[in-house]
Image (cartoon, rainbow over all chains, first blue to last red):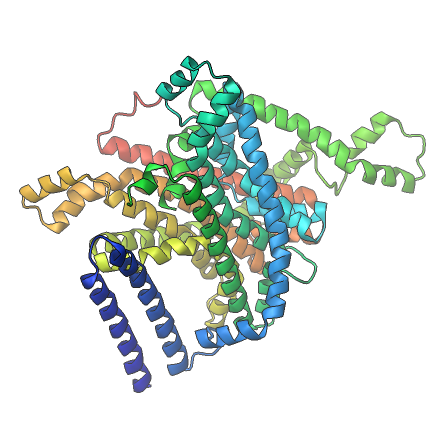
Length: 286
Length: 314
């Protein structure tokens, strides 16, 4: 026991010392700074994993309460086919819902752009809806669209529609008066002003909505699966394996879900960086 | 990410929720009115097949279109209940049933609100504490903050069923597991918002504090904390909504104690659609109420701190 305690404390001390050391030697500018700033959180994360491992192994924590990271990794590797099938099933509902929800939110924002009356009516509603526990519609959608991925897509559509509407709308208002006046002096039509000025100016807001929705969509798809699925899907896996006390499998599924969420978010952030390279928040960093 | 969480919650949300601006009243009412009309048409359309079957089973072949339509709006288990049916159910289960009965929505809502508020208190307390640490310790800022932000791209709600089971192993049952999940969901917005708020004083103001030779503690209480108040309340509104979602989802996985989530699950098991919609609307009202309540505290605090809010809301 005392050996385990010593080992745990040692990992903590080494990890913390490494964080401090890397921070000391990292310069404030240049390529080395970027590497250093990346290294610090990575060392911190590795330290946490090490602590977790040594506590669970050293203090004989029952795997039902908390399995060791190494065991979770082993479980992840051995059950890749099951996890892969779950992933595909969940992604079907998620992607379909994400595209439809974000797409329709964007289109409706374009449609109500010309009508201040509808904007004043819909936007407070949109803000209000974002405070509601929308995941609660999951059982209704399962009743309407069945157990398969269509019902999950429907939940995702409802969750992603309003954030997209609100953000696109804010974005369309983002271009300045001077710029709009300039377009007018060019004799640009409404359509030209929209495609050449207002939509590009709205892009940071649109991407903001897309990023918020990436997280929301994953939550919606997984929680909707708690309410009934064909026997596959990440939410289904988590719910059943918890019931069977197979906690290692639950953690493995959560790792997959976490990776999915991060990669999904990362892809959108990368696209954003490529598309809105002109925006101040990216230019500053150089 | 930091901006993404704070951005959609600027001035607009508060104005939208409380709806004090006269210019918004009519448009919102129009949209809501349209929604109800569309809902009625949708209810007729979605329940049509079932109603035809019901008539066919009753050997009723001579029904008029009028019978058919009024039938679709008054079924026991419609696919889409009409608004008046939901209002009736709400009226029944909120006002008529005794509040301590398991059939009362007040009973279930109280359970949910208890878990939400406990979780919200723990979560926002932890969030503020972490934010203070992060602002003052550069090492934590560099090492912990990226993970806190990254944790938001992860569907933390997937952890809910497991947290319930783990805490069960320690004989921790009742309100605590639900509150833990609610706290977990609500701590993040508070941390991010508070870090932003505590850093919001500009360098000039910080320099002024230094010329006064103010200690770190004094700088904190006299400059950083007051400056962070608007950020705090904005993030508290997100946090309380998130806590409610956490409590509802926790109740779905732990339905034996009751609560609005349990009510949703029971409704979906037994096909009681009207009951599901009523529970959903109750959850929505509770969420709105909690957010508005924090908005009220925000204004009270602003008045206490000497803000003039007469001009802000015409």
